[in-house]
Image 1 (cartoon, rainbow, N blue to C red):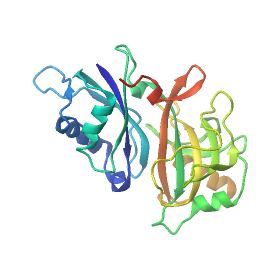
Image 2: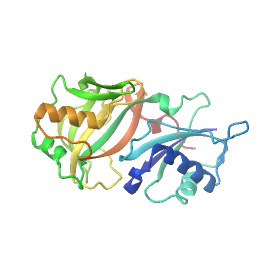
Image 3: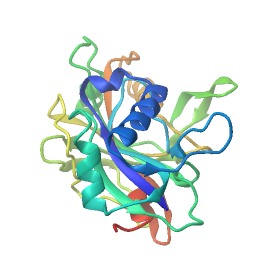
Length: 262
């Protein structure tokens, strides 16, 4: 049976790599006593795969991985079992059952949304300075975008689906610089934030993600910094991912809607 598991990665675990996260869940699955499937051959390993690996330094409450299991109990029981063997900084929020022919989560990802706020440990307060400008997103925004082949300047504006000022305590979007259109609207004027963040205010970003047009929040900050003449230095921000999305019939849908609880 194929399952899709949604989890958090918060606190000091922002500093562990994606490879370490993979190893962590392999061990957690064994400690929880799950009947996970293994590959065949001389070096069998668990059949699990991750969606949209998170860069080092970022926290999230919208991470996903898929796994194949020989037998399962139910969503509530499995969540309780695996959360009991993990630290509070990593929590499983949901487990859903997928169809046998379901695409892997990494192939479905098309967008992610984030809260970006000032790093308390940095003297550069670029996010607060950008918010103070009270700007509207221009029709074109050029930034240095990193690709597999290197770096190049590119108009990133088509890949910014939503941008606003967010109260991190309530989730209220109190000002929009770019409101998502009807097709892409997955938020109203409030988003759900389960993780306490270090600053009361930040920028909400809904950005293109996936293998084709993957836009990072750092590139948006860099482009806005150049456009608004605000000094931006890499590392002056904290980034918290809210959720990961796929293309649905009516626009973007959370990956947690790709199956159902069991």
